[in-house]
Length: 84
Image 1 (cartoon, rainbow, N blue to C red):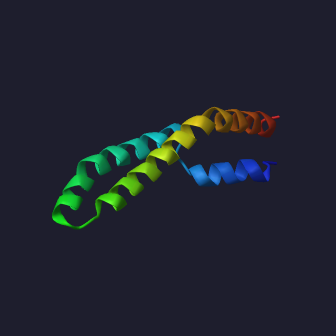
Image 2: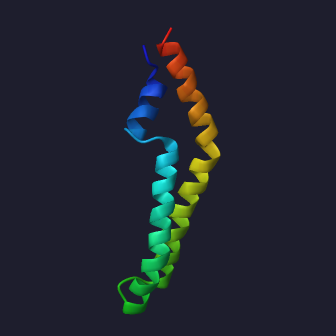
Image 3: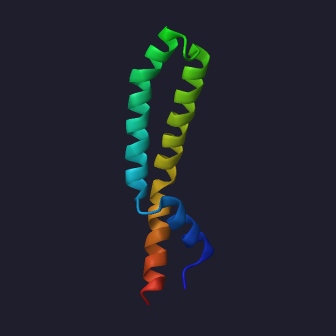
């Protein structure tokens, strides 16, 4: 039986791997870097809000990159336990 921690990790990731989550966030960051300056120029967004939103997304990416090896290790351990 899968532990609560493994269940939580798998449910958070859904059908995506952590690598796919990181890749999607990186694409979103790239999109924001292209779109937000236009929003700021048109008055739809303040420069401060633009910077804050980009910084928060980039911090989330950095956090996932740091914990990625641990998540992979935990999932691998859970898979081994499940298959015994």
